[in-house]
Length: 487
Image (cartoon, rainbow, N blue to C red):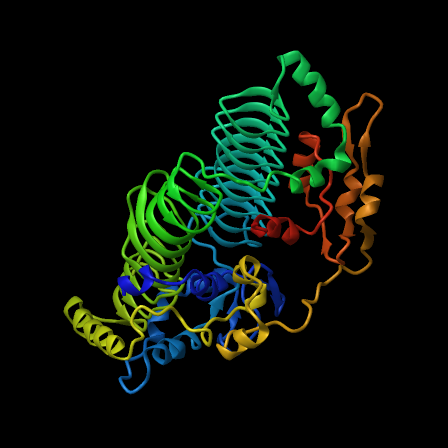
């Protein structure tokens, strides 16, 4: 199984594993849902209901049927269990409108948030980060806005690849810097504009002028240098990589070594031997992940989807605090289970060995879940954002779902819809040159140039006002997608 995953072509990794992370939320029976409605899942239930009945999931246990293929056995179980509308694990508060959240507070329309507070419209934020908006991959960050790959930094706005820095705006590739604007590839510098150093007084004067041009903010961000160089790393390829070594391919990685096909993986300290892993986090020196779509803590995880705090787990989905489980769905604090059926330790090894021997003979051992089991629309997933060369015919031939119709957006009755051009009617400098945003914007529905609908929420408005930032001009999902526009 390990050897199979060590040699996976990059395109297969994207197609098989990254397609299990969809970006849109769907509305099903009045619930916001991580899953679209399809015959591939039994039903969608509120997450609180799901959590309250997780001990009952052993009642869905199935016996292994030897005359059925490996994946047929799992598929029968997966399609029999009601699934939660969003994945909220232990320690969550006021985060119902987000997905894959753990030990987090006040998260909204965000994904994969662990141990953080006040996170909006962001993906993969962790390690006590606070006040993060429109970001991808933030580790130990505070007051971060529309930025990608930020580590141990604060007060960072419209920037990319920032490490151990503060008070940074419109910058890229910065290490150990503070008070810089429009800079690229600097280390241990301060009071710089366009890579030129100024006195503190000159810097502050010029900064005031530059930050008065609010209409240019988004364009300055999109115009940032595309050459996002690896930071404090050795023998690595691609970009958004910090303190890594011997990494073959991919983006948004920190403190990871001797790995291949890894993306959005970051740790407190070093980890190693991760193969085909999309989103993983937390705690030092854990290793041996093969074919994973999101896990946290512990080790020895194989071909599984969303399994925080588990070890020795194979082909499982939505597990927590489990070990020695095979083909299981949704269990918590369980061990030695197969197809959600409880076994003794001795029985488990006997049956599991028989299954692995059978899979080895029919060449399925090491393969990830096939497209016929994936419950998400492929063209709504991160896989399609990373590589849009996957054709409609290719995807359908491999039995992935593909969305053909537009997602319907509900506009509240009697809501006033304004365009992004009209946003400037609600924000301006006052007579004392203090930036002001009219709170009436909270009552409006905003339509961007692509016709996408979004709104401003109070926490967001407070942050924008405090840091003198303009109202966002594109839909929140488009802000996240900017982080996947790799060169």
